[in-house]
View: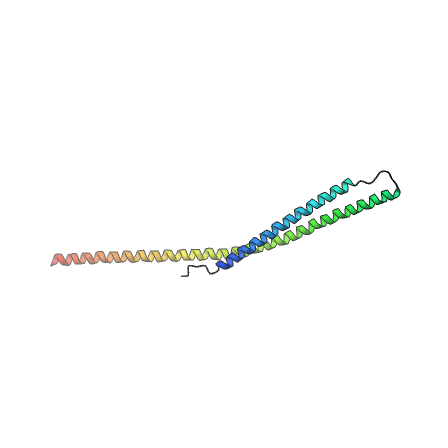
Length: 152
């Protein structure tokens, strides 16, 4: 019986793929946090840019245009969060798939280890049985020899 698990390199590769996928998920989560921080900053900028109460018409129009620009920036940042969350969902699905593939090979490794152990136990039991049979045969042979000597 071959004691080595021939798919060990495949298992190492699957673990590496899973680790890479986990890293990608962590990176996308960091991107989500960064995008959420950007949304928060832009909202604070928007709140801080209240429309002027007085001034020329041009100044008021310019302030309103600036607020609209800030609002568009908030919308764009929120869109970045949504996109980053979508990317994170995709990368999480890739991670789940990689984990399934790794687990499948891991289960084969566990079955192989169980088969090797069962083979070893059978081999050990056969050796013990052989020793018992041999010992019994020696004892029986010794009894026969002792009877033969006493008869002579």
